[in-house]
Amino acid sequence: MYSPFYILYLAMIMSSLTYTIGALFYGSPIPIYSFKRLGRKMITDAIYVAVWINIFDFVINLINQIQSILGANWNAFYLDMGFLQLQLIYNINGLKLLYAVISAVISYLRVPSFLANFIVPILDYISFLTDILLILTFYTQLGIFIQNYYIILIAIGLLLMSFPFRMGRGIGSLLISSAIVFYIGYPLLPILISSSGGSQYQNILLQNLSLAVAEISGDIPLLIYAYIIVPIVYIGILAGFSIVLENFLGGNIGKLPFPLEIG
Image: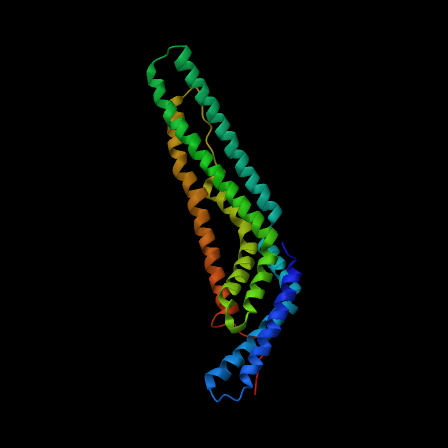
């Protein structure tokens, strides 16, 4: 992977090219207003990207400051995710032990066969918790990607925005806005999962199998809500903020921080 500063160097070269082409269009003798208007826009776009490149370090520091103000922390994110995963692993192992005990009782002690009715819900619950564990692993891996590559994503976004004729302006501004929003807000995800009931588990008691199965059935809606619905809604909210910021950075309301008069 290239250094973000090398990508910024390429973006500066590309913005210079965009500025040059825009100046040629704007100063051409062709008496077509739309032609000159395109040149003016390209000049403005090139200067806009150049300003971003020159304040790049300031923007990165500002992002980290906003994250600190909101109380988001990547170290806490990994600790909380690890704690949730350990809880799941503990419950999965406990249920496997319960399944082994029930199977041994049925097979070797010849107890009434109605105990076999408790095996299927336990196996289904073990499979369900394993799926939840995989989902948590995905959340963690996504967080690792965001933390490690958000600076590079911002730099790539600036490079795309520097292309002539606004060829990469939309996707570039979306990359920048998504990297900023998700870097700031994504570390809060495990807090939302825990506060939604994801860290609350009932103990499975061997001496009361009917209660154990009832608890298993009651946990499933809670886990679906805490580990699937809440994260999807929260990621959707972050995506919505990304789109709003993308419109500000590269859409109809994306402008220079100072007035620019040409001609």
